[in-house]
Amino acid sequence: MYKKSIDLIAVYPGSFDPPTRGHIDIINRASKIFPRVVVAVTCNYNKKHMFSLEERVSMMKEALFKVNNVKVESFSGLLVNYLDNIKSFCIIRGLRALSDFEYEFQLALMNRKLKEDVETVFLMPDREHTFLSSSMVREIAFLGGNFKNFVPKNIYKKIIKKISKENKSV
Ligand code: ADP
Image (tube, helix red, strand yellow):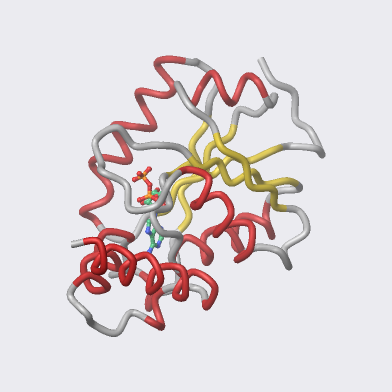
């Protein structure tokens, strides 16, 4: 059983491929509630990633350099094992719409099954980010649409660079 702690670390896990303004919104909210937040970047084995793990970590670090109680790390394997390693029991996840609920509910209960005292806290982004997802950003970018307002500036540049590289290699 974990004790209440003023040093509580909340972990926001995700693939963040790429990080969007929706993710940053959730991280900013979490950083106001929890003493310490770790953004834990990982690989989602059900998804083919656009950016490598290292690239996603570095993009997230750049986007968050102003938020001082937030750290960005990467992990592989089971989230509950990672939580154990960094002595955390608290997971943050974002909820956009009802469509997120079923998957997130299942994930939260599975994590609790894997490790009894793990808690998942859901945060909702600003309304203007509720339609935003990494996959939508990737799709718009590949199709040449304007996605400038959906991602932080540094990430916008990285996506444009990645796409022009891929187009050249085709
Ligand atoms: P995963 O591969 O774990 O689904 P994502 O990077 O897609 O990783 O998402 C990480 C978390 O952020 C999830 O809880 C997801 O619901 C949430 N999320 C994604 N986009 C947004 C958004 N626009 N607003 C709020 N939460 C979001």
